[in-house]
Length: 116
Image (spheres, rainbow, N blue to C red):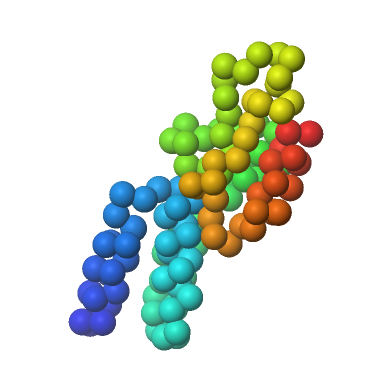
């Protein structure tokens, strides 16, 4: 109905020009809306949008490999890093892509775990 169209327009407007973790943060914020019907309608959207994020996260945590061709993940790789700086400089946090539901401490743990 009309309410769905209104929320669809809101989602489209809020998510315009966003990708990766920034997009997930926006969708997460919208899901937190007080109306249970809005939450019910938007939760599957957040779940579907999160699938690539969790795929990259799993690969990073389990294998230490970063497969992020669109630069949407909150960890970035510097492929120009020289060998003697590899541990400290090869991988770093990309704050603009850290989803709001991942704390700074959690992000640091994820970074360290994947590097190990």
